[in-house]
Amino acid sequence: MLIRLLRDHLRPYHRDLWYVVVLQLVQTLATLYLPTLNADIIDNGVITGNTSYIWRTGGFMIAVAFVQIICATGAVFFGARTAMAVGRDMRLAVFSRVQEFSAREVGHFGTPSLITRNTNDIQQVQMLALMTFTLMVSAPIMCVGGIILALNQDVQLSALLLVAVPALGIIVALIISRMRPLFRQMQERIDQINRVLREQITGVRVIRAFVRDSHERDRFEGANTELFDVSLGTGRLMALMFPSVMLVLNFSSIAVLWFGGHLVASGQMPIGALTAFLTYLLQILMSVMMATFMFVMVPRAEVCAERIVEVIDTEPDVRPPAEPVRVGALHGRLELRDVEFRYPGAQQPVLHDISLLAEPGQVTAIIGGTGAGKTTLLNLIPRLFDATGGDVLVDGIDVRELDPLVLSDLIGLVPQRPYLFSGTVASNLRYGDPAATDAQLWQALEIAQARDFVAQMTGGLDAKIAQGGTNVSGGQRQRLAIARAIVHRPEIYLFDDSFSALDYATDAALRAALAQETAAATVLIVAQRVATIRQADKIIVLEAGRIVASGTHDELMRTDETYREIVLSQLSEQEAA
Figure: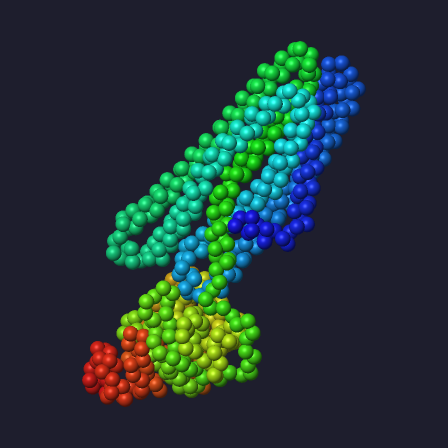
């Protein structure tokens, strides 16, 4: 997965990769050439007392070192730029895919996990790419070149490499094999700690209201300790790796000096060649050590890559049509024919044989007990889910055949839990229409009965809104969400229990103003409060995912016992009449 992910995202940057490879090759060759020049200075200059040779060769060494520095700097520049670009592209790919997900896919992964995958996981892969371009590219060149030049200095002494390099490889392989499962657990523990932290931040008011601070502290401490334990295990293995590498490196140096010293004493090897051989040995083992450092990162990056690819490869249930139906002006006539919806893996459908017709200029209300399927039914219309049976039609066209942008322009949804984004009142309202003028925004606020409290806020339309709208009350959030839908000016309005936080007077005033604004539109209202829907042109009663009755308020009071029970649980006989 890691190779595939990097291959797919590195393809646009092949030119920069060639720059990295060429520059790393030149700088590594320059690094390898310096010990040979140093050996020549010792053997042909220092020992013989040839000062001019020392100056001449030393000057050449400075030039080679300068080339090495320039090439190393260039390789780091192009490598860092490419790695950062790859990280940017992966974040965009994950974000774009998540934007296509339906509520089912988001629920499957979970919000904390999606956040971790788009931040920490991608950061691990990005860091691996950066280290590869700056260290790993030069490591094999250094290793192979060092072995060749070490053999050129002395073949007998090079036999030490047959012991040192395999020993180092075996140690690294054993440690890496233990680290990979721990890295997978680490990423899962990060998901868990994000989940706990997110719940505690979101539900801080409930926690304090029920004085559950100590309980939540224990929950967080448990998740934190689990992450600590796994991190400690990986840390111990990483801490074991570098002393092991240094042990092999130091023993190899001692062996070179021991056996090389005897060769020098017997006249079989010049002192300069011994110095060069020792340097090449260190370079070979250092290149293996750099590769070791990379291998430490590879298991975690591989696990992260699998998690990233899992998101990117997940095909959303709700997919745009391959060839959208081309339509002219749509009027918003909404029809559901024998609609069924079943959650994946569920034994029973949530909705059964739902058939209804909502005409422009009419208000259709849906009421029923908790869990009757009201919100699910409403979510099928804008394709937050797709029906698993039957058809959802707008002006006779299946919504699955419409371009998503056309469907979005056609529908204005006010969800059950209205969400406001961090920004200003104006920026939130302009989600409905980015080109809306201030006058249009104020008009929408007037209809939504929100003008007075927005005018009293510091800055008016430019008043700050916190993430989720936490700095305004629940009723104010609902009214701002309704105003946002009004700014959109759709053909179909969907209100999912959008008046529940309003007092009766505000509710009545808002519905009266809204009736004039939506006179030509199709309006669907899901509500628990009977007073909100009693004037609707048609009221549909849902029970256990089925339509059990439909009609006006007066008709249902006479003919349907379920509706009558709901009404009388909220109103007296006289009020209901």
